[in-house]
Length: 138
Image: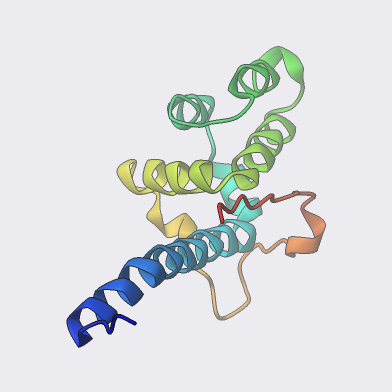
């Protein structure tokens, strides 16, 4: 029987647990951003422009081609098109992070603040039809 030294044992535990810890932290960060987006959904819709949507989509994953087509002016009113865009963004963790980066890079970080007073435009998360799928590797 081989006994591990304390350092070997700690290294083994760290190697096994760090990816899980990192994954949990990433999930928490993305869920916080999702909460900020859903809390400011109507305000974001009011501010969203097609150029900002295109900038974000250039870094997104998923069926980007279809959503790029859906947000064109010929496909309905701006708020409806931008709502489809936000629905797409909220589905993938990667896209949520890219959207948050785009808002910050364009000076729109105030759209990510959660208004504690309750006097801002708010849309309850259950009013937004999004299906989030988490992929875990074991």
